[in-house]
Length: 149
Length: 149
DNA sequence: GCTGAAAGACGTTGGAA
DNA sequence: TTCCAACGTCTTTCAGC
Image (cartoon, each protein chain N blue to C red):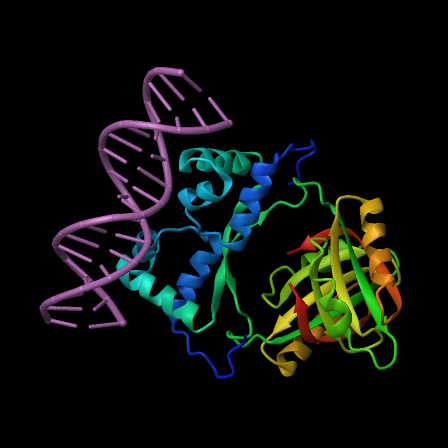
């Protein structure tokens, strides 16, 4: 759910979000020291940011290479007429290999970001996408290296 | 830096990572209840996963929409001959609008994921990329909606 | 909006199984 | 690798400003 109205964030809020971005498990006391606020005040601000939907939650950052899901690809999906990409992609939600998916302008209708353990694994996932009802064709680009992000 | 050697993860480790993925600030005691382990045991496993590089850290998940950086795009970059995408993209690292970038197989040489506050903002960033030395041409797809991820 | 105090929960370490 | 026990720190709530 996205906020319809602008959410005013002051400098302290932005600073707190920046610090939580670097360490999502930082204690409120620790953050408070860096922004000259008490732990209580920091907690209240974070709670408000959650309520307003700015903060969705917290998560662990994994090194996918260490987990050996090193093979990535982007798949452009072309839909059949009278098929919305939403219909197709909603069924892909369940697969852990689907990192992200967007509907886009241009040639293709949707873009799907995949991550798998190896090319064989990747192939099975791409096959699965191509066999989805409503998918006319697809075009895949395998990731050679992640340069940024 | 990516680990060269396979990192064996047992089912409990994977379960813990899954739970931390859903809530990166979950207490070790809370996780322990769900995986039938004491808080201490969970903490020691997480510590080991950090040491082994599987866990890089923790972070806050922001709703970019609420922050009003709602306009996203993917830019395929085509390099001039004798220019490596690495050279081009290393200079893009500094821009906060560049969410991620990869070198890929297929038509284009690289794929750049951008996020900006609006289409005007987006346009200036795409212009900047097109003017990079070594960039022959580019092809952009604006994101209409994020379906997964 | 903020601080400070107080109670309980949690993180962290050492030692033993 | 696990658990238990103990200590210090942190979270959370509630007055009070």
